[in-house]
Figure 1 (cartoon, rainbow, N blue to C red):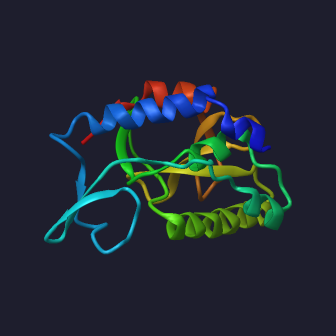
Figure 2 (cartoon, helix red, strand yellow; figure 1 turned 180 degrees about the horizontal axis):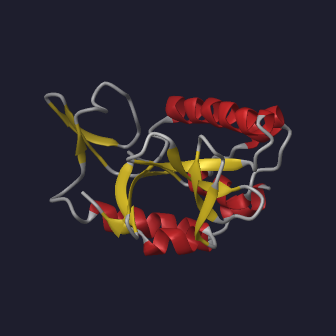
Length: 183
């Protein structure tokens, strides 16, 4: 599994490219007041209650092996790449008519929280006998998420109430390349 994480795969390049496009909208570095009390290698400067940040490349990359072991499931390669490439703050974007927030781990502690949340999410889906998905984003609707269909690698909009999956893109690379920047 680690061999694909060390390569410059299209999904990794697409995530890094989107992150750079997203950061380019700011004069200097993006800033956050919500993250000021949370340590992160992303922080480049703190002023009062505001942190300025940049993405932090994970070398070597992280992976979701712990989630795989606990749930007894093989997680799609693109999910390992998505969460294992970098630490960053969440980023607002738009896909067609869907406003969304791309979720990103902020630090080692946040990555551990992410693993716990993925374990809970996948456990619940297993209990409900639904397709396994790996969430990567939230929408402005509390009952919808953006996720990777773990069986196909497609990016889907998932209804958490009904379990309905609506395919948005055939893969993570296509999805990230089609995202529009939203400040």
